[in-house]
Image (cartoon, rainbow, N blue to C red):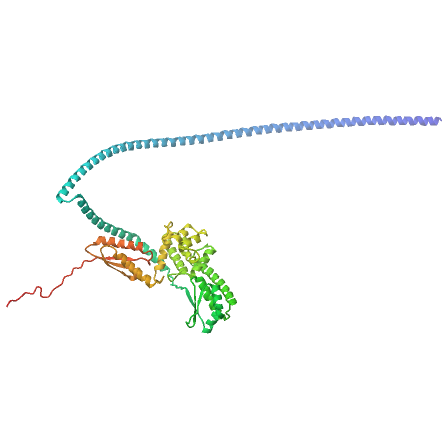
Length: 539
């Protein structure tokens, strides 16, 4: 029991000791932690003070740098402002000097104008005085002329009407003589300055291009081997020839002429289709309506392709680019058209060459000139499809394809139907006349030729004082013989000019140019009679 109490007391002592130790240890630990916290706080406080000091130093440095930069920029701004102010002052001074000079110049001009105004006023006063003097002299002259007229009438014993008629007749004779001399001088001057240049351009263009003469007719002939083939062409009861004429639109002429069959049509394209189709049928030997329709369809396509190719070749040969396909196709149809025996397509190409050469010589656009010339007769391919002259139909047709105004004016006005509004129209007209009048270019019927010669002689003999007139050189020259007693030398010059002008007015178309030569001569005729001055001997 005592041991137990002893042990219990010992245990309580140990527990108290343990509790006391724990309390002392906790207090010691708390004191240690507190001491360590104070040291940490002191270290942090010292670090904060150091950072604050450094921040204050940096702020002070930044403020100092900012102050220095601001002062520098301020000084630069002041310097720039002073510089700009100086430049502005210099410009103002320069402007002020210029204004001062202009003011001085205006003052001088004002003085000059004032001086001129005074001179003009003085001259006006002088002119007024002279006008009065001239009016007075005119009055005196009228009085003197009236006195002289009365005196002349008294001396000449003529009435005023008779004297007036006599004076007018003399004045008319003098004016006519002077007009002839003036015309002679003007023509000579114009020929010296223009004829040589014009002939050079024309002859140069002709020499540089010369096309062959080509002739087409409305009738084509096809060779046949025998009369049996003619019968097969006609067919049973004429069915083959009727089918052929219906398919081609051409007329087939089968007559007694041995070895040939003729195809006639006013449409040259249809005539060519008919000729080629008939020739192919004859060589094939199978002639019946179905075969005729097949061959005609094939040949029509071939001819259309030939037309298109001919148009393209013509455009390429004339060096004309950018034509519409429809224009090229219509241009190719001119290959089968003729005018006075001249192939129209070759004529158009020739005119394009001539017009381009002349345009280049004159400093104009040669490409535009060739374009105008190549299309100038395109209306001839449309004559059978449209009403009107080929110039009008060609103008209406080409206008749909937005061609240049110069091209349209050349098409419409190359025969003088409308005024020329572009310089290329007279060029096309000249080249067209050159192509038509060159040797071999066109052929003319005998009736037209004789009528043209008769018209030339009629026009020449219609003028007073002309005794006779003769057309020579195939109608390219007219020799006019005048009465020397009624027509003098100056009047003969005027007469030649009047005859040429009347030929131009009355004869619308003629090849090239016609030379008018007026001949005036005085012939003295005397006869020697035998025995008139023989002395008589008396026995």
